[in-house]
Amino acid sequence: MQRLLIGLLIAGLGAALPAFAAETYPAKPVEIIVPYSAGGGVDLTARILAEHAKAHLGQPMVVVNRTGGGGAVGFTAGAQARPDGYTLTMMTNAALSDEFLVKGARYNYRSFTPLLQVAFDPAVLVVKKGGPYDLPLEGFLDAARKNPGQIRIGAGGNWSAQDITRALLEREAGVRFARVPFPGGAPAVTALIGGHIDAAVAYISEFKGHYDAGTVRPIAVTGEARSPFLPNVPTFAELGVPLPVGVWRIVAAPAGTPPEVVRTLEAALLKGVNEPAAREAFRKAGVNVSVRDAAETRRYLEDQYRFYAQLVKDFGLEPK
Picture 1 (cartoon, rainbow, N blue to C red):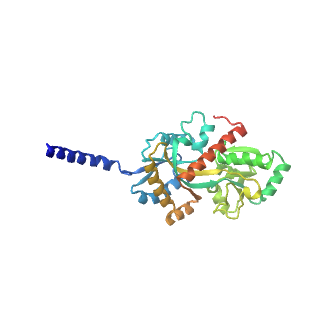
Picture 2 (cartoon, rainbow, N blue to C red):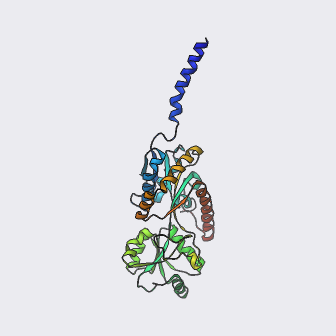
Picture 3 (cartoon, rainbow, N blue to C red):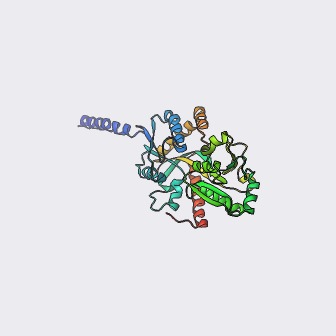
């Protein structure tokens, strides 16, 4: 009988070992959902990070573009994925702000467990080089005060970070522009060069070619620090108009992901983003690396939530 019990115990342990091994994380490739098209800034950020973090994770990291609905398709898929660490999402501001601005959004920032902030792209106020408003910010704002509602300013996306920059600049500086909407910052810059508008709010990647060609002049950037790509361009805050706006890129898992899996992913992603080769790849791609760990990112998202909640109240915005 004793031998029989020992035999059964050994057999039971043997049967349990494969099941235990199967639970070791990660046991298969990890997918990163990018809610936007391939080749854009969010996609490039995800692909560079995945390439350099995979060795530290011990499994491939595969970027999958799930587009549609201005990011809603990808964010919904990421929020509803199994919280097992095998499906991550590259979050942007829309994953948080859509709760306030998009009717029927099935996700918010609480739908995700943040792992790492990778980048922050400031919004930039640009004017045409040699044009009538080719002025420092102080001069530009003085002109706007003298001509209320006359300076035509283009920004991409209704209540995007670019459009929010325009609205906050009006409020904080006591000016009023003629708002000209565009589907994105790039077409706004094209209109600027063509003389159809007087200024534009765009991201660096959307006007860098024109800047290099000497056809546009950036006069101020949002955020807390100057952009490494525009070191001679002051922040709005330096000039007395703090604008805490920009597009952040955060890697997140679904809410409810086990803490030990979160720690494993965070460690691998941190090591990957800090590799010298990764930093060089980000630099060449024009990605403004700005790293926050999981705890810092969580606090930042909470601050951003309060910022957007107040913004919606201040400007009387409603979901559409």
